[in-house]
Amino acid sequence: MDIKFLSTKEVAKALGCSLPTARQLMLRYDFPLIRVGRAMKVEEHAFLVWSSKRRA
Image 1 (cartoon, rainbow, N blue to C red):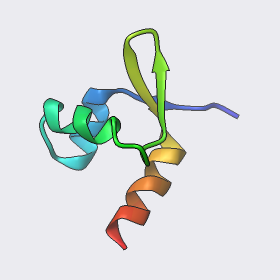
Image 2 (image 1 turned 120 degrees about the horizontal axis):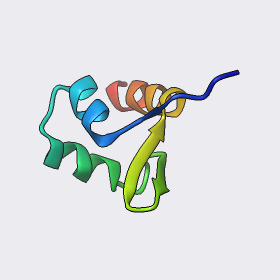
Image 3 (image 1 turned 90 degrees about the vertical axis):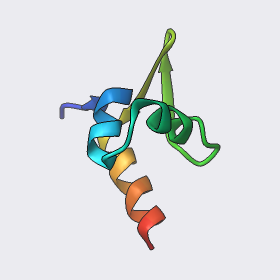
Image 4 (image 1 turned 60 degrees about the vertical axis):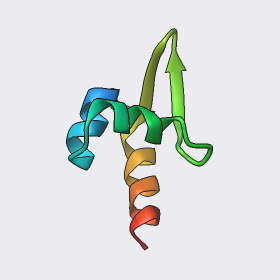
């Protein structure tokens, strides 16, 4: 099983927003953020679950 992580740039593209907006969203308390050093990542499945809950 391969786990895919999304970068801030990929999150911005998926949401159709700017990089600064994606960074702000990723720092929300309810966002499934993973820090790798200074980089912010999110596991793809966790991002999809989070975004589907936000649309409801």
